Length: 130
Image (cartoon, rainbow, N blue to C red):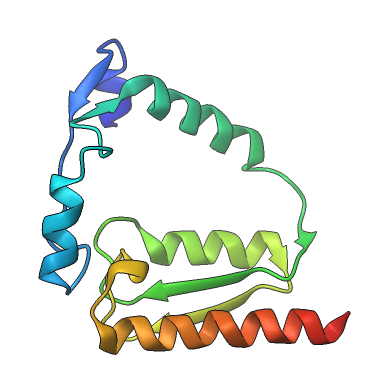
């Protein structure tokens, strides 16, 4: 809806999620990172919607895909995304990290550890299959 209303604008002020990680230092660093844009490109948003429309009706694919999802992610509609990926990807593995938020790589240690362990295990399993 937002894109349909504002697509003629070139950029929009960026909204910062205050709850994308439990790690306050990571959130502070992210907000102060000079490589993070202060505005959100509507051209990027348009490209996203064109991409989504092009993949929406693709047939199911067989891929060894791992999705690690925090159950307190308030940045994306992760429940919708997981339903979509479950329909599209045969071989999908979903690991939910209870209480983790959106920025899993910048989460506090209690959430980052299970994320890191899951990635390491997934990679070892892929290597051992070949």
